[in-house]
Length: 166
Image 1: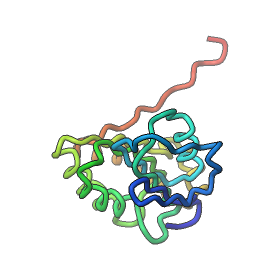
Image 2 (image 1 turned 60 degrees about the vertical axis):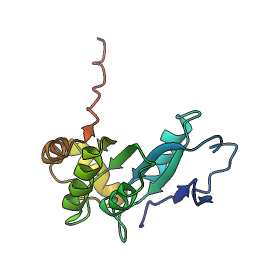
Image 3 (image 1 turned 30 degrees about the horizontal axis):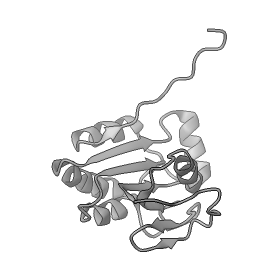
């Protein structure tokens, strides 16, 4: 997958290359009909640790998308009807991968399944952080958001921090 890839966990395939001790990140019970695709291994582990009993069928960390991309994985998992919800964290798309992502997203959402996209790098500071983290060229977050919405993707809103003193 590339740099900043922490690994992959496939509950159906009984593969876990996240290398997080089970006592820190237990996987148990029935696998939920969820696939988590993320550019950041740390983001994936943080999210998983907060899901409690919800255990996604698949967790894929793509890192800097050096070989396989977010669009590649979404296209692949779109063929799995057992996945009802896709959670995607992306700092930027590999060259020409945005179109592949949108094509797969439109197909998934047309089938009544859901995609929730968290797009990092929405501000100048965020774009700089993305570039230093996975060398992602964040591109225009507004364009990403609007194209994703047209494809039926739910785009996570930017949560604003409260003002100091108020």
